[in-house]
Image (cartoon, rainbow, N blue to C red; front, top):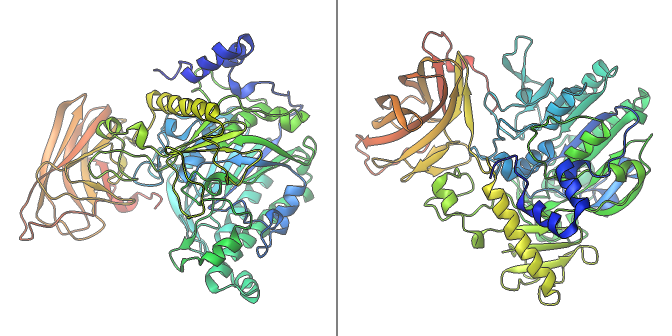
Length: 637
């Protein structure tokens, strides 16, 4: 199936629903019944990180104080049934492209499975091409090597915050010469993100702008300014929880600063502000450990099942507030909305145009709900999955590349999915975190989300027709995604005329004893153990290869690096690794275009023949004629 073919599930809808759906299928579901905007609005998109639906006082939390977000909600169209994905990178891929995250190549949170395909078009690309100035600050998590960073994906200005550094935050951004530089500050990261966004808006307020603020709060480690921590300690919370709640209130304060700036600058009426979270809450922190059961119950007063990483509501239910004073009347809407729906909605309300060859969207616009109050009802069910892709490939885990062997062993019956339509939710192979959760029937749970949003009553046996229909739809949806060109793809690393960076822990294929980890690759211990990488050479020539091992281990391990084009070897070298963490290992003469590099183990000539090499971090490819060193190449952590 090619990308330009219509999804088989849409054809099924065409057959059942007749000419009207036929017309919509060819015009694209994203623009169905879209209301025509009067002028181009400014767009501010705000995401929090690991913030639960119940982490707001307006949603019933008895401890956390979020006065500014409560006020934003009161001025907004609130969507009470808005779903994202269970983890951050997958949600962000769907948010920025309007497509199912698996189709964008994003199927996990690290190990290269958080890299969004280079041919994906972001909402920033679209808006920039339609007269908008675009900027983003904060968490990115869709690729961290050249070609994949936010300044490469449609944003005129971008600040890539170092992940989860909340105090004395630092990050990465291009300088005026286009070279990436590291920026250090003495600020808390929520303050830094807000300051940069306000500065950007002030400089660009004479034209339409798109500002994407991607806060890191309240992702662990839990750490907040002292005045907020002391406040919650005075409420009886222990240090860990006081820091967690303090992070949320500090972010709330800075979002309030942004809203105040819009009001004082006269920008509010023509500015759409969207607030959401990327996934549900997590129960622990690397600096404090896990919450107690009592603390978890306190944090989740509405008793949603699950947590981050799960297909239960507490993993995927997010606030969604849309404030646009001149166009949107504040109220609460109960219709089901998916994170993919935001992209086509923004396309509609900004009057933007997509290229004729734009990849098919999975989102459906709810612009008419915003602008006219028209009821929204999704036409196509959404498949929900995250990093819990299951494969019987040896050593497969949540960071392993989904290569041909992994794909051949991704048996449908072992996958853990949910399927959501406008009313019902089907969960397949649910994670039963707590003993009081409803028990599945033959591996399935079915819930009426309008009448049972807490997912308490399994309807598989009482509504068998609906259950069977949704089981068939779930399998069809998965097969459609699996068959789509580019789904689950691994990164292709660009190499320009001077250099390229390849994450060793983000391979396209692995074999033998090789084991993937979040930020390094390991398991090399026997002849034939290998990892392959896909690269794209801008200019043919000789490139020296330097390997960063993250440690001094590896002396005496012998490897071969081979370059292939369409399966034919074009060059190779052999090397014995040294004790140095970062060192040259060889040189390759590479042609222009797509090349595959294979790094394969030959032998272990150390006295510790039982040991494995477990610390591969990066390969640097630097043009032989260049004086660059890896120290000159700044890339995000």
